[in-house]
Length: 568
Ligand SMILES: Nc1ncnc2c1ncn2[C@@H]1O[C@H](COP(=O)(O)OP(=O)(O)OP(=O)(O)O)[C@@H](O)[C@H]1O
Image 1 (cartoon, rainbow, N blue to C red):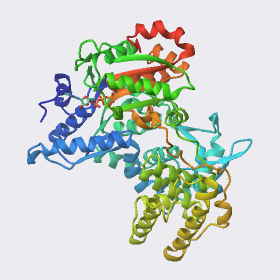
Image 2 (image 1 turned 60 degrees about the vertical axis):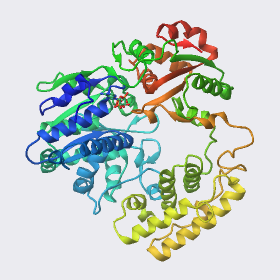
Image 3 (image 1 turned 135 degrees about the vertical axis):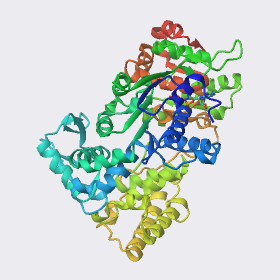
Image 4 (image 1 turned 90 degrees about the horizontal axis):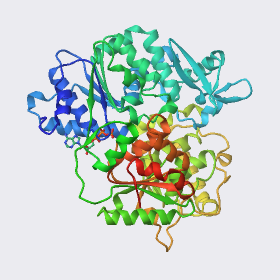
C-alpha cells in the first residue's frame, strides 16, 4: 500500500497514533502523505469515533476524497473502513456544530443557514457604527482570548460589542449567519454548551489538518478547545505558503505546534513537482535547502524573467507561447497567474460586470455560464438574484436549494436549473447587447419564473419587481466580448489569481507581477506578498516565467539573476 512513498513520507505515515506537526516544502507530496497517514491511522485506531482529515478548499477536499478512495480500492477488504471523514474546516464545523446545535445560542427556530450578503431581505439587518448604518453581514468577528472583538467596513474600524452583539443576535434569530459570524456562533456553542464539545471530541478522537498554515485565530480556538477536550490534532502544512494573512492566518499555530509537549515534529523536504531550477529559486527565496526529485534535460532554461509593457499584453502572451513551444509544452497547459482579481480579469481579456442588485447577480450568472463555462457558479448567482425578487421571509432560498429537503424543493431546483442552462428560454445569452437585447428578455423570463414560483410553489414575490429588475448600469455592449475575427492570444491560456491555484501543480506558469510584487518576491517569504509570489513560482512543474514591468527591470535585474532566473 505504501510502496511508492519516499522514506521521509513513509516515516510520517508509520508513526504511532498521536499528535504530530509536519512542516513540508512545496511539492513534497502532502496530499499523498496525508491520505496514507489517514488510512494507516484508521487501521491502527481501535474503538469508536471517526478520523477527520480537514483542509481549507473544496478543491483540496475533492482531491483527498478521490485519492483516499483510490487508496482504499488497493487495500485488502479487511482494511476497508468508512469511519473517516474528509471535509473543509468550515464544512466540518458547520455540519457538526452550527447546523445541529447553532440554534441553542442563536435562539432561532430553524436550522441556521449561511447568507452571502447580497440577499434582498438583509436590507432589514443593519448595525450602527457610530456614523452610519451598515449591513450586519459586514461585521467581522475576531476571537480575542475568551472574548470577541468586532470590526466593520473597509478600514476594519472597531465596532463596540454593545452594537455588534445585538445586531448579530437579531440576524441569528431568523437563522442567518455570515461566514465570519458562523465561526463566532460555533465558538459560542462550544464554550457555552460543554456537552456539545465533549460529544464532538469523543466523535473525532483524531483530526488531521492539511494546509495548516492557513489556520486563523478562530479555527485555532476551535481546534484548541477540541485538543483540551481530548482530541488528538495533527497539523501538516508549509509556512512559506501562508497567503491568508487578511484572514489573520499567520502560520504561527503550525510553526509552534511541533514544540508542544507530546507533539512530534517532522519535515518533508523533497520536491516532487518542480524541475531543479525552480526548486533552486524557491530555496533562495525561503533560505531552505530542499531537493528536487525530478531532473531536467541538459541545457534547457526552466526559470525566466521577462520584461513587459502594461499596454502590450498580447506581446507578453505571445512570448510566453513561444517559450512553451520551445520547451515542447502544449500551450493549453500554460497558465497566467496574477496577484489580484481585476488584474486577472484584465489579462483574461474580460470586460467589467454590468448592472446593479438583482440584475448584476443575473448578469454575472450569464457571464459565468457563457464565458467561464461554470454552470454551478451560474446557478448560485441565479439563486441569489431570484431571492432578491422574493419577499424577505424567503431569505434562505439559496441554502434550501443547495440541499433540497422535500420534493417541492427538488422540483424547484430542477426548474431553476433549466432556467440557468437554456439561453433560448431562460437566462438570456451574455453575448446579447446588455441594455437593448439581454435586458428585455431577462425581465420577461425572470418575471415568468417568479410567477411560477408564486403560483406553483407558494412563494411570495417582493414588491415592485419592475424597479428591482431595472436597466441601471447596463450598457450598449454585450456582457462578454464576442470573439471577433482576430485571434485573442489570451484566450489560449487559463488565467487565474495565485490564491485560486494554491495546491495545484501546473505545467508552465507566467506570473504577471507589478513592481511591488517583484520587490516582495525577491525579499523572500517573510511577507504575505512575498509568499504569494512563492506560491506562484512553486506551482510550476516545467517552466516558470516572471513578467516584470519594463520600467523597473533595471532596478531588479541583478537580484533576479542572483536568485537563479534567466532573462528571456
Ligand atoms: N513519493 C512520491 N513519488 C513520486 N511522486 C510523488 C510522491 N509524492 C508526491 N508526488 C507527486 O508530487 C506532486 C506534488 O504533490 P502534492 O500536490 O501533494 O504536493 P504538496 O505537498 O501538496 O505541494 P504544495 O503544498 O506545493 O501544493 C504530485 O504530482 C504528486 O503526485
